[in-house]
Image 1 (tube, rainbow, N blue to C red):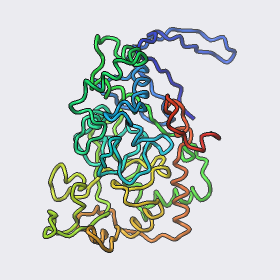
Image 2 (tube, rainbow, N blue to C red):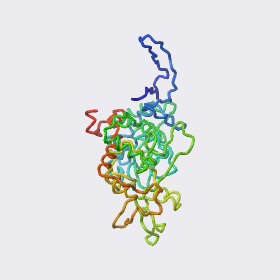
Image 3 (cartoon, rainbow, N blue to C red):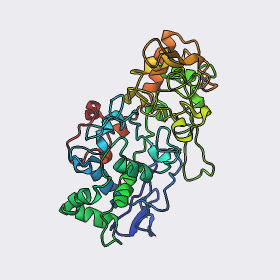
Image 4 (cartoon, rainbow, N blue to C red):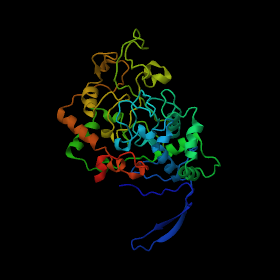
Length: 401
């Protein structure tokens, strides 16, 4: 069940009549004045209010503009892709690939993170400690050159011109930024994309509504048990331990090395004697160059996790069953041969919680049933988040939801 919502923005009227009806329908009517830049989120019960950046307030007009830009292939320099190239609603806003592929063909070293509840992320990246807000993340994707993603660097005027010349976007930019004579800026595009992404809030799964199957209930017990230790990295309302919202005061961010790799070095060119991750994909170490940060990445939210395969920061594990049985149960992954050969369970860099556990086939089935219960079909099928141009298909199950 969701809380009531009000959404006002852009050039919409600043005054809203709200009916406060009593049991007989004869309640009083009062006028509530809401500033045009004030946006009230559609929040699941028990969810805290998101923290909105003061330099990028949200309005409904910005959300609408952001949704169109998110899906418009003209957003990429090549004219054949946009944010949806890596974030499809039917896959909980991931792309189904091991590693992201930009519209221009550039391969990204990491897996596309789900945008589910991204507004609550303490950082907006797998391991970049500098990207705190959705606006900063949108700007990074627009301008990134290593790898090139949407290709805006050096082409801002050209790409913005596409929208400046489109009558529909003329109206949308004017509504989103009514006080600006010339609203066609890269920063405004990033603000609009961030506004839309901030609305992608999910919290209406079977787990949330407490309508779990017997298997999912047993899996829930396992998930929160000290034997498996899952909840230490995936906890709270967002099933993630690095969150920010309107009520947080501390910088709540954690990065973990989950023993995915244990590459020897430095003879092979790696910086540590052992416990290395592949070059160019070494987690927080790539920003701090501290030995203790090797292979440390931000644990993502597990909401809608059954739809976001393949898994891990580099998409190197295909299924959730493999994640449980071949990786976490063993206290780390073993790679038998090749350039990344090594036993993650013996890595000196791994997190202290990566101790492994014993789990039966039946218990694994129960845990996977619990993961399935985290899928929020109302979110996956919500037309407010779908392609306004009608080109990107919805999940096949949406016909029944």
